[in-house]
Length: 253
Ligand SMILES: [Zn+2]
Image (cartoon, rainbow, N blue to C red; front, side):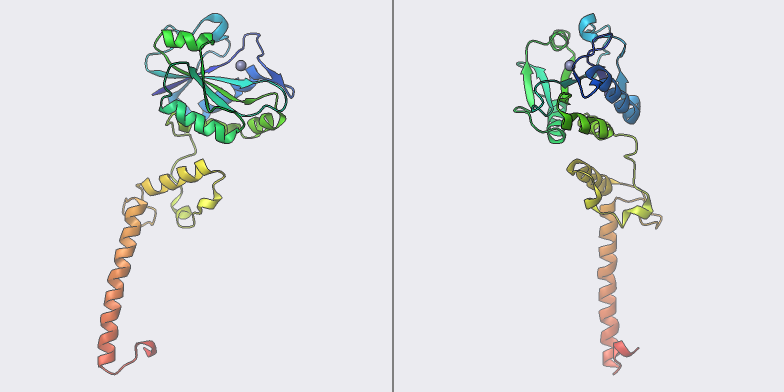
C-alpha cells in the first residue's frame, strides 16, 4: 500500500493562519515528518502545487492503488478545537478513515463528529469521480493556541499516529533490545496507543529475547519458563521425599 500525502493550500495560498504560523507551511512540515518516519510506503505529492487550484486530484497525479490523505488545519474562533476526518458524503468510512478518526479525535479532542461527510470539496469530489481512495484530515485548529502548541510540540507523535492508521510501521518502532525486554513497563508508554502498540510488538516478537539461542515469541518464552519451573518443582518434591525417608532435613543440607 502506498500512502500519498497531499498538503493543503500552497503556491501562494497560505490557508489559515494562527499564532504566527500558516496552515500551508505547517501541513508541509507534517507531511515531511510522516515521510521521514514512514519511509518507502509514503509519497509526498508535489508540495509546490496547490492541488485544489490546479485540479490535480486525478489519475495523472495519483498512482493506482494509492491511498490519498490530504492534510489541513482548521480555523475558527479561539475556543474551537479538535481534529476530525472528512470523507465524501454517501461513502461508508473505510478502515483507514475509522482508525485515523479514532486517533486524531483522541490526540485533538473537541469536535462534534469524528468523521464528517462533505459534498462541497473539489478535491474530494474529483477523487470520488476518478475512483481515488481519498480522505481529508483536519488535524486541529491553527486558531486555537492549545491545539497549535500540541501540533508543534508533538508533530512526530501525530505523524506516527497517522502512519499507524494506515498500517505503516514508523522508523524507530523496531524491536526492543534484548536487555530492555525483561525490565519493560507498559506504564512508560506516553499514551494508550503506544502502550497497545508496544504490548502487541512484544508479544509478537520472534527474536531471542532471553539470549538462549531460541528464536521464539515472548509468549512461547513465557510458556517455556513456566514448564521448566513446573518440572523443577516435581523434582524438588521427589528429592525432599527421599531425604525425609532417610531421616535428613532438606533445609539443613
Ligand atoms: Zn485548509
